[in-house]
Image 1 (tube, rainbow, N blue to C red):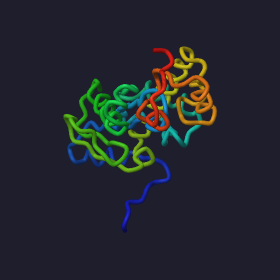
Image 2 (cartoon, rainbow, N blue to C red):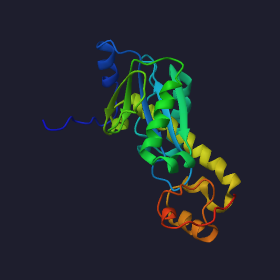
Image 3 (tube, helix red, strand yellow):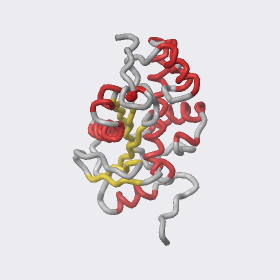
Length: 215
């Protein structure tokens, strides 16, 4: 078999494999917000209680907003530990989105109130500088319920942050598109220029040096 099969829904098998090898507890970590033109990238780390795993955990992108909100509350209510960290536009522009995302995941893991022995990381890279062993899982939010839980926490947290940002910068519609490059968002930038939440290292901003609204 050339490729490891991906289950139809995430399961707890990777966590149990860690437990059986003496790597327990196991945390999952994921991020939300790599693609937007504005706002932070938000990472979450979650250690699930194996005796209280919420039903319906899945890749946050496969869930409706209502399903994510319900699962967000369920995860916070029964997980053994949950932590959130973010990297803002300044850090993203100073480094790059990949490094900023990995650093946010590292800080989320480091902030857990329970120290994990193994961290399952969504994607191809393990964040550098973690104090425990990490294992990268491509499409991990579709394979591990711990990563799926982290993806939901990160997504809901970021969406709520961007909704609040919309109150500060109402001209951009952040509550609607969360900073993603939708036609409405691009039209708002064309009309008003970028604000302090925009990632100036991203296209189209890095092609020019416009004035920043709000500075």
